Image (cartoon, rainbow, N blue to C red; front, side, top):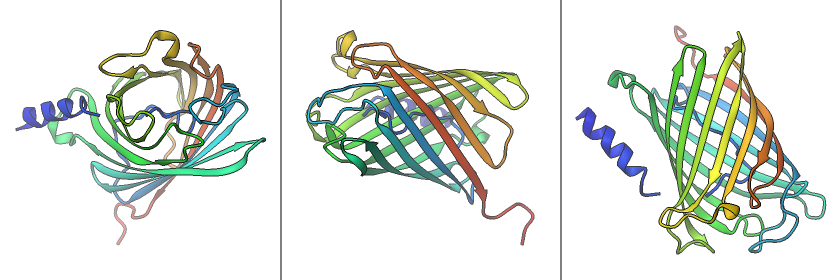
Length: 260
């Protein structure tokens, strides 16, 4: 039964758009603890990006993207996340552009898998002035592993447009990778890779693909706060050339163990 569920999990990942610059994050497999919440603010500024309107989408150059993410732990291996996306550029002002909801389930510890394993499903809306596809779904398998001081996570995400210019296209493949090393007690340094290759049946040519590398600092061993910061560099013509991100989170436990 365990093997059957594992292969169903892997197969399902083959049937499901990019995070753009609103939520730049590689997920770990562990879900939010039961009866606890984390409030996260994703702040991402595009120092050098697209300067023209493309497919009706407003340019990203010198845009500040602020995303509020609230994740609630429901059970020991199930959580639900909610996102509110906002954008500020000087020529258009401050705009609330959409929201997503994201349930995620993790493989139970009793399975004793050699890696962390979870599956995230995200659905929601974004304003057509800021996204070529207004309604979309993302299915994100998450596989991670900790080796002593080295941590690696792989998110082979797939997305499908429900409404927009890509609604008749095949699912899009958007792999994300994180690797970090604990150099100091509370400090993890490493990199994150974000890609968007295009439809799975025919990838875009390399200049039209999105590939970016972020150099990352992560705060470790803190039960109350989360911090993930660093600059990102676009590697292709279609990718914003320089983005700086700050992800700050506050964790709250609503019912501590031993309390009555």
